Structures are given as C-alpha cells and as structure tokens.
Image 1 (cartoon, helix red, strand yellow):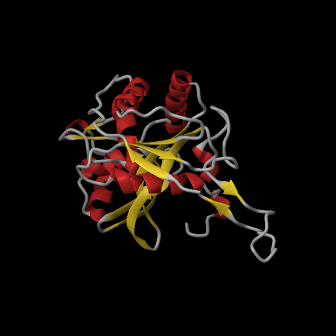
Image 2: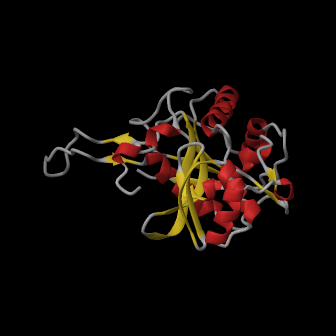
Length: 254
C-alpha cells in the first residue's frame, strides 16, 4: 500500500464571495488532476474563512473589561484578546504569553483558532463558522463535476498538550468519519483491542501539513491519494467533526 501527498500549485489568493468550490475544481484541472473515488482533499481553513467573509478588522474591535484583564495577564493586545473572547465558549487558561480556549465549535486550542497569518494587514480570520457545512459544499460540487465520491477535510494548525510544535488537525469534514474505531478487532497476537480509536482525519490533515508548510509556501490545497477509507467512508451529510471532540465528562485534563 502507498499514499501520495500532492500539493496543488498556483492556487489563487482568495477574496470574500469567491466561488471556492469552483476555484478548487479549476485549480485541480490546471494541475492536470482528475479526482477519483476515495481521493481526500485537505484545504486550509483560512482560505474558507476568507471566501466566506469571516474576518475581523482589528481596529474596529471594541474592548471589554474582561479583554483588558486578559491582556494584562497574557501580555497580548487587548483587541486581540477581545477577538478571542468573541469566538470562544470558555477561557480555559490565560497566562503570560498563552490563552487556551474552547472555541465556538468546541475545539480546545490556542486563541480560539484565530489566525493572524496569510491575511491582509490589520485583519485576522476566525475559524469558519460551520466548517462541516463548508466541506460539504465543496464535496458536493466536486463529486458532481468528476462523477466520484471524494472526501474533504478543512484543516487548521494547532498545538498539542505536552508536546512542542504545531501540527495539522481537522476542523471540518465531509465524506468520511474523523475517527476509525478498531475496538473489537485483534492484534498480531490475537488479543482483542478494547480502546483503540484512531484519529484518522487529524492524521490526514497532519500529512497534508507537511506539504502545505507554515509560512509563505502558498500551498493551501493538498490531495491525498491512495488512502484506504473503507472503514471511515460515508455520505455527504453523514459525518461531523463533532465526533472527534471528547465529551467534557471524559476530559481528564480540564
């Protein structure tokens, strides 16, 4: 078994109200790529937010008292703290140089996933408001164009508890479930697996991140070809990234 990780070159800079599914299709054609069944497309979340007009002009932000307190604790700009607050359900940690939140989507991450990079100066992009729905629209368009069943992942770059370095993670999904449940199967010695659930979508997003890069690479769309999605494949509306979010009752680290 082998997997190809293919960066889609010359993807254009995205503006508000751009037809993102059509742009993705044209970029694939320009790269001489025809999608086949089980192909997985991984798209950077910033591109989705920009196309959907989901960005914030920093100078227009009105700062609350809570944001001022967070600014003092963290050393971060008060307007930045307010944007983080506006996009969070809960502030989990606020300390010097670090703010960890639960985003509106339920993701536990730094700064509610607010992205300062790869957007115009003076603006920031929150995560897409409904990244699952964004992924579904892209999948629906591409499946019709190519006559196939593709898989679409919206990805972000996030840190991990107790490990240095950020990796790609899935924040939106369509066409495959975000995890693979191996419970009830057996290992090489015949022992039944009791708790093994693989974070498949995060692994695919992380693999794509190797090609995307983190600075001025300009590679925001990646095709993963050859992944066996037999255990995770599903219909257009049958998967949600919420499946990968651990229930708070089972979260031992809050």
